[in-house]
Length: 336
Figure: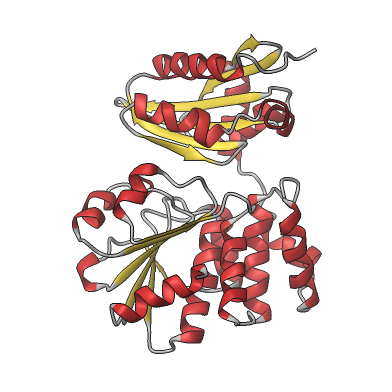
């Protein structure tokens, strides 16, 4: 049985009429574009479905640019979960990424279907009806593209372009793309999508606050070497992920950047492709997930990109992260 048939079985068994699509806070283009594509796929097969897309707080700046080009109604108000028949969590592998909505979603007994390209979280698997998590692909939009294929539905040129944007964003304009991704991109190009023209939508000038956060992160950076690998730690009040990427760009092998606010921690992690290829260390599974448990929160993500939220103080969190990294790197081939 393919994944799409499993989705349809759930919809049919429950006589679903009202569908809720949920994305994580500050939803990035992969999350928003996946939701756009999923909404269109569901309506293509079941035109009578009422579909609502909801994102806690806001979407990212780049996502706003995508929505200007491809309008889709997105609510930031907490839904009445009991008013829906099923919920999809898209590019969101744990309800904790929904912030304050998490507790009420879990208490609603609403059937949940997860569609993601992150490693499935054990806690999430316990509460969902179906988990479609494909770590072998580069973006959640690629998972949705495969669902179109399984359903025998050809996406419109517009929907194909939207999925292209989600894939391009999550792969840093294909720098992190896997082999399967290029096949999808080729098929989308054959639908008449001008890839170079489409990518311009994702080009958003970096604002002054993000530039300052990156510069502060580099200034505050502390480094250590573990078997030749350069591990960098820093802290900023916002734009942690962007700051971590900047630190990788200036030469670190692993960057861990966090913020602390009244005992609440947010941590972003990035590693170079060389670090992952030579050590096999998966940031989401091997570093972020155990760190999230230690911090009484949640962690997860990709091979070279991950995040953690939890409680405590940042310096202690960094010490735990360094300890986990040392244990994982032990036995790996040292850097020359």
